[in-house]
Length: 223
Image (cartoon, rainbow, N blue to C red; front, side, top):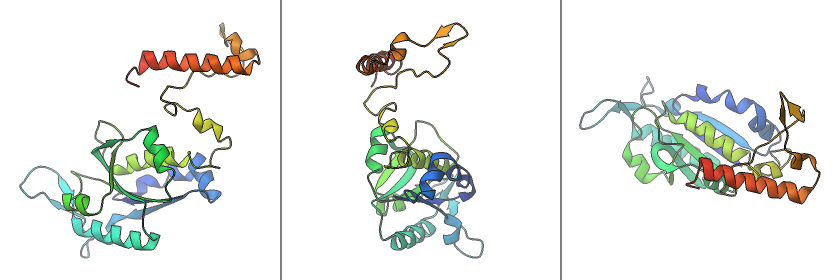
């Protein structure tokens, strides 16, 4: 799978993809992540990428010309994208089901918003999906791009050492994950539930399912 990211501040993305699961996936050749600087496509000798809003108002807007040139150039180099995603607070809220669907794609382009956003004409002409990581505003879409890339990448077959691990994460089955324990069996007077020490696989799975239901009802009844 390939994810290309078009960023205003590409430096924000240099660290997260050089560690942990994403790094290992890239080294195995299972997952390709490329970061592109929008300023490369900027206008004039100063590589301008933003300008004032028509109609007045605080905050700058990313100009359409650099974005259009970047999207066209990257699309041609990639041989096309399955989706061109704009990361914006007013997009569809990202969740595990969406991560699952996107992990089945081959090539994605993530367009990072900045300032007051991008010119609407780019959204109208080029963007095929608009995604938000939550009901709050970030300084830029780069942070949201990290979230999407990590959530999608870990679902690709072969990325995790134990592929069943992703299948038991919170939200995969509409429930929150149950409590987990490790050694020692007793810590400061608190003991691991006896059922987990029983070795009875069917009863353990039933206990975990019941715990997931109870936790979901308590913390996320909306699910």
